[in-house]
Length: 355
Image (cartoon, rainbow, N blue to C red; front, side, top):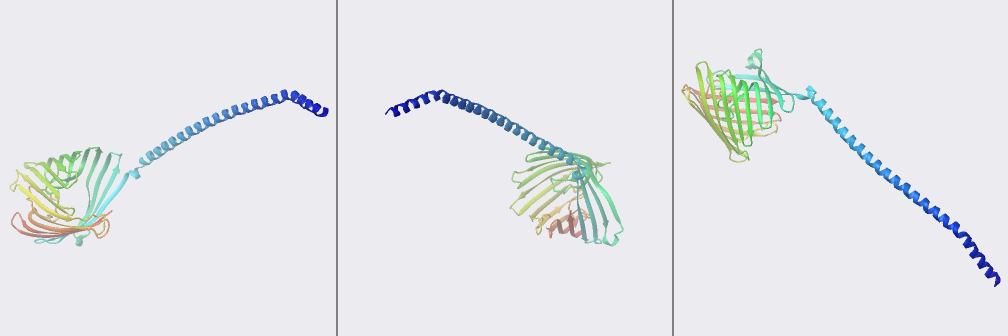
């Protein structure tokens, strides 16, 4: 019994002696743990700062890459070879005429374009040809036009020698070239154009057109005015025209023009078309029929291929076909009279290859 009491006293004495030391060790461990937590918090803040820094560096790099891409694009845009393009057409035409010998014409058209910037381009056309296949040594080259073409949103300005096509009447009055200036405005469904210059066919020229096109493009109509003066000869022409898409495949169009300075003052054209060849799509084709009444003082240079030698009146039938991509074949037959009363029959054929 005494031994048990002595052992208990000794244990109590040891515990009493050891308690301050044990408490001190615990305090040290707690302090060490706090220091470690503080250190981890500092490391965590450092890591957060480092991540933010890396994100800033990454954004800078992305911005720099975008800047470099813009610089490369700008340098490439300054490469004139990328701004220069050439298109063209090789065409063969044949006329079988009632009162004259057959005619042929082989022609190469080259159309270069130099894009100065996003808005401005320089355009030209060079044409080489020879008439009649039995005289292939009789060839010529000519620059048909060269002009400055500027487009800004709804506005277009052209200056130089450029195509002249009377859009309101579908080229019944003119399909040629003139030297001068052109200004155009496109405002939704309405398009306005004004020309001022000189045309070698009819002298000094002032003209303008206004054309309306419906939202679905099924209907269009317009009015045009063209004044020419060559010495004492004047032509004062007013034209109206339009077209309507009857069905997806059938379209009808018509035009009327009046020249109050001419003996035969009136011209008109009525035409119906079915489908139509698309030179980009193999196998497409189309057909048309028309009645044309076009005196020479109203239709000064009409677009019709069968009017090679004379302006006339009568019926015309024809068709187009694309046998392979980037080709177009056309055949037309005209039957009528010249305005001097001579019966006329003209067969026309053309084969075109585009590049």
